[in-house]
Image 1 (cartoon, protein in one colour):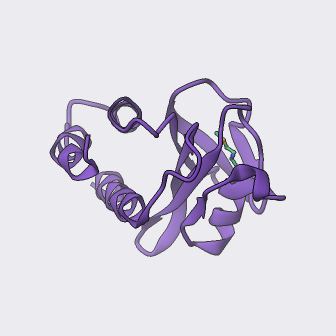
Image 2 (image 1 turned 180 degrees about the vertical axis):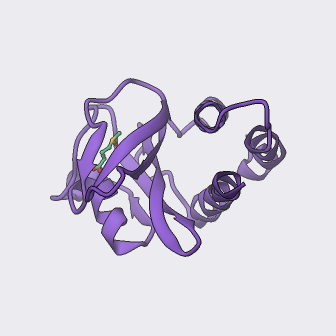
Image 3 (image 1 turned 45 degrees about the vertical axis):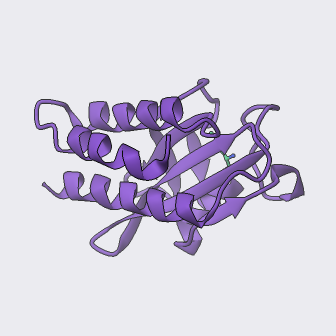
Length: 153
Ligand code: SME
């Protein structure tokens, strides 16, 4: 399904006041994983309190051992300090990478800002080599903005 077509459903989930924030985030992960063929694992990590580490909050796909990731480690940990999108067309080419599954070929991590502060990120693994485009980056930036709005409320 084209990414843009998912926006109304995502907006609806993120503004569902009867759902907890964790439940909303889980549903967004599910809808992304189920509707985008090359999104094989979708998760949200957030800064773990005052610690210099990320903690997995919600995900869809295979459970991962990497529920805590120190800042600077792996693709996720690097985004926690760079504040920039990180698109990895081929995970084998990365030296600072934390492997979650041998099936993963590519990854995209987009930081999530609340009031200008990098407080978390959306992380997507793909079993397809080099699947992510500028459209994915822009779409995931939009998703994170919508999530941030829900966190503010
Ligand atoms: N590959 C990530 C670790 C998280 S998993 O993809 C779920 C990384 O290198 O930071």
